[in-house]
Image (cartoon, rainbow, N blue to C red):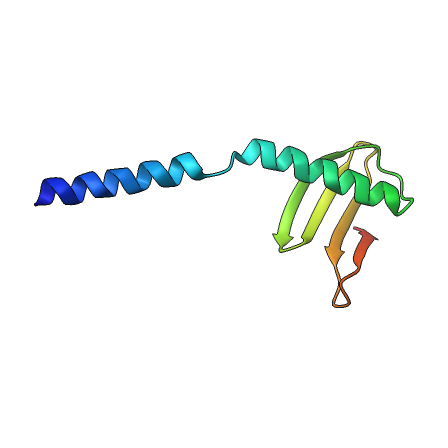
Length: 84
């Protein structure tokens, strides 16, 4: 009986790890999206080099040109970019 439980546990962990998204691919797409958001706001950035996630839809980003911004969605559902 223990053999079957161990087998199911191993199967569950394997399925969990295989189905997990790759963190580096996700980070690259998030950085690209944040770069576009900042550019659409007309603010200087160049390219987002790093993005620290604070909460859902709330990031602090560091740009190629040295600027830092907080990018978040406010209570009205609008995207806001503030100098950090």
